[in-house]
Image 1 (cartoon, rainbow over the protein chains, first blue to last red):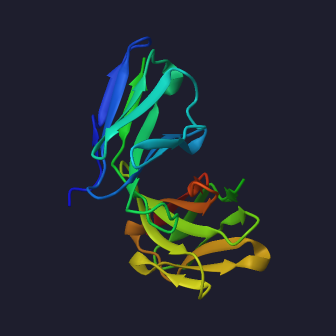
Image 2 (image 1 turned 180 degrees about the vertical axis):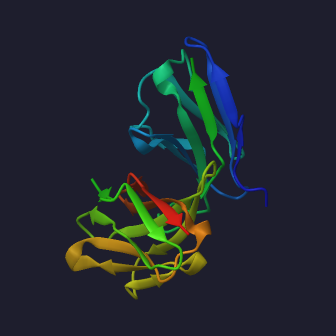
Length: 116
Length: 113
C-alpha cells in the first residue's frame, strides 16, 4: 500500500494567489482529515470527512479556505486568496472503515506551503 | 470539549538513558488516548493507543505508556533511548460525537551521545 499521498510536497506562491492541495487517502479508508501545523499553533484539525461528507469544519480558519471530497479516493484543500500567515505544513490523514475513534489515523507526508 | 497538555516543549536525554514524556488530558468520560511520533519532514506515525483494559500499553519501537485515571495522565516511557528516537512526540485524546482527535502541542526529543 502506498499510504496517504499528498501533492505537491512543497508549494511556494505569492500572496493573493489560489493554492490547491491534494490528498489521496488509503484505499478502503472512509474518514479523511486535513490538519495544519505551525510552530505557533501546533497541529490543528481543519476539517474532517466521513464517507465523503464534511462532518466538522469548525477548524477552517476563514472563508478563504475550502475543502472538497468528490469521491472516496480524492480530496482537495483550497486557499483563495492566499496570505503569508497561511504558510504552514498541511497534513492529510485517513482512517479505516467505521467512525470509531479507536482506529488509527494514517498521515501523509505533508505539503509545506510558503506564501510570500 | 477534550484537551491535552504536554508540559515539556523540549527534552534532551543521553543515548541509553531512560525517557518519560508527560501528557495530561481533560475529558469527562474515559478517553481514547494516543501517542504519535513525527520524524523531521515526515507525517505522524502511531506509537501506541489506549481505550480500555490494561492501563499499561505497549507500542512500537520499545515504547510504553501508562494510563492513570486519578492523575488524568498518559505518560510515554522508554527504558533506553536510541539516537534514532530523536523526533517530536504528540499525545492525543479522542472523544466526542464525531470521534474527533485533539493533539497536544508536542515535545521535541533531542538525543545526545
